[in-house]
Length: 293
Image (tube, rainbow, N blue to C red; front, side, top):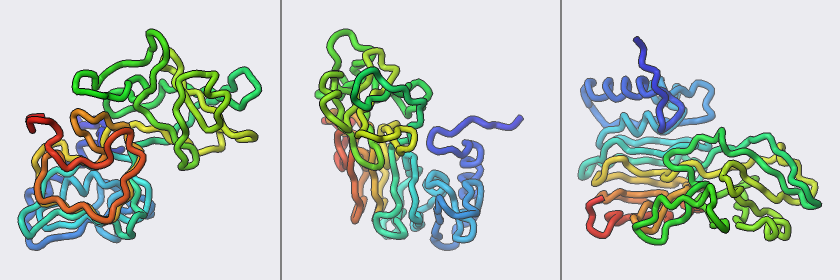
């Protein structure tokens, strides 16, 4: 029987990533190595060796395989995934995540949204697209409100039970953030605005005049973290030169940054751009008041 369970981290299957991890654990470590990632390379393959000639297509297999002292070199491109370091480094042997060209390796917590658009009745160019086919990592951010304290992090505001409230999700068209509103009347007055329907099934967007929605690149946030270990307390990890953007992370309690050290130690985070997080861009604390998340 072949195990083909889809992996939630990237589009590769879990069995392939497991095979890489097992091969790395068994093979003797002679010296530190560089794992190469290049999304646009003609021979990129997450089941390959992660070399310049045959790089990984996503960062996930490199993050799973890297050992203390290794470097994960990420070439320019868009990487729609949560990067999940499997382990930390050691003193004088950090695991380094390095963008080959500063700012050009872009890691996003969003996916492209391509619904069948239907025009809403009225003079304004407002269109409706169904959200149901979208796959979210964790809870649907277009159904949840933004947390203001530790007791309502899963507050459901769609389907609405009364007046509409703002949701956690974000919308970007041609890389520009659109403004969320909660009333159709406000949307009609404001171009580049959007709202989630009361039943939570559709996204309504007010486009600029003469815009054809199907020809626009629209992105919506689908992940609640962009770079964060699954296990807390990892140390000696360096992150250099990336652009991190578009994250439906909840906050501020607990502190779940789009980029998060998760109570780690001896991290070096430098030369990165972190933008368009729903709440916190970077957290370097213990995530909770007592450090017992």
